[in-house]
Image (cartoon, rainbow, N blue to C red; front, side, top):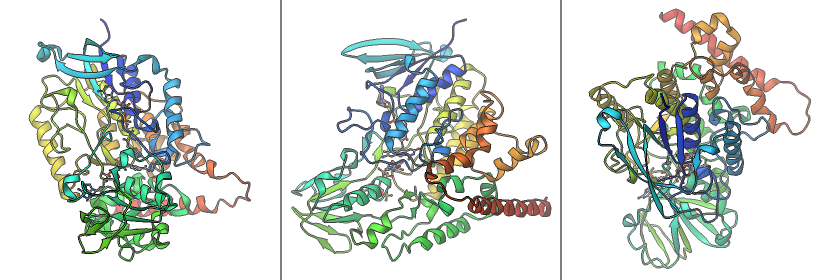
Length: 533
Ligand code: FAD
Ligand code: NAP
């Protein structure tokens, strides 16, 4: 019997890992990438191709290396915890080389349409039409993995800003921002306080005359560098913390987080305090923003009510004159035009079972990979989605009935609506830990802590107290990696190494403080379990 052929659309990080997942399951991938190289969003260019996501030159990733790596291919220990975009791309190139993925990619080939074959209800097959250098071609595939990303189409809400068309200065979307050079000595307004808005305000404020950061609802600001200098995502994502959180109300967790963020700087005093709670918005990660605000180089403003030829009038009635440029850091929309009716997207909302499978197909042979906005890294989520999708394509796993899937999708949407403030950026949210654990369960690779507690207590303790890294999903089950145990037990070494570039006398005091802290928490947890169960 011949292997099933799978079309992978997109050669970004989701596409690369999907190719590998196909190979692991003995499927035959053919990846179509519209540009001439891999990396998707992470391949910086001054003039990126049409249809590819684009970043600015200085982007430093805000998810740390141990939390964003692929589960069986670690990021080199000397790489920084938060990498510059060029190092992120370098890592993806290393991954592609290590697993020999490039030979499965057809570059400069755009997927134009993906249609069900006439016998789809029995075969589950798709007709995929591609275009390469003006030539169209149709191929039949047994499955399709859509890995086209969701940060390509700029959301430029000019209709919400009366007068912008008469504004005589420069205005454009953050997708088109590359570097701060042209803003030297200028007065610049940045609209939006997502991670792009925060980063741009900080960078431009180094040379601009004045930067105004306009936000319609404010934001809580999270630090990359957390307690004892550890990456914040490493510290917040332990199993123990998640377990303890389950005993607390969301309001209590919010209170704690807000207290910590206000300890760093008072969000009210800095004009950033929103009406909503910390967990009700996608976090803005920025260590430098308060420094720029306290220096007066960035001024926080409310929403712009209207623009004149040279000025901005804000909703609170204040006015800023002589504005040279306005940058709309107002986010992105996504769509799958080539899928026609198979997946409908309305106002950034889509119905997918576990964020992957459209529930309305007769056969589960279409998977969307990487369509998630996690509080954490996307890459390992794409990987686990790919591992699950390929198991489903192969028939190793089945999906529930259409009704059951729809019920769950509706439940998930209601949960999201209840938690997040209404915004077009909050339609595909997910918590890193919960999403990873759920997918790991579906794939059959969630580590069994109880049995490990008896067979390998050292490892079990690390899984309980340490960061829940992607490598943990290679310890057992399909795709088990023999290097996983060692990789997990040496996580701390890889975090510390890139900073330790000068020899200092070691007291190990910080590591022991953290370990003791975690150990105490474990004792508390044990006490709770003994009391209640
Ligand atoms: P992409 O990287 O967008 O790749 C999609 C690929 O599909 C592209 O190569 C494109 O050319 C190709 N393609 C599209 N349509 C077609 C077609 N019809 N036919 C053929 N090929 C096609 N995420 C994090 O986890 N951590 C971060 O810190 C982080 N920082 C970010 C910073 C910025 C400024 C932005 C905008 C996003 C950031 N993200 C971050 C999110 C980012 O989207 C993901 O990290 C990641 O790039 C998603 O990979 P992807 O492969 O799904 O999509
Ligand atoms: P985003 O997260 O969608 O933020 C968009 C911002 O624009 C929000 O503050 C939003 O406000 C505001 N906005 C949208 N429409 C508006 C309107 N009509 N009027 C006023 N304000 C409006 O977009 P982003 O900041 O570009 O981030 C996109 C993705 O890239 C995210 O995943 C982000 O984490 C990532 N990113 C990462 C880095 C990094 O790693 N260094 C840097 C940049 C971006 P509301 O909240 O009120 O809707």
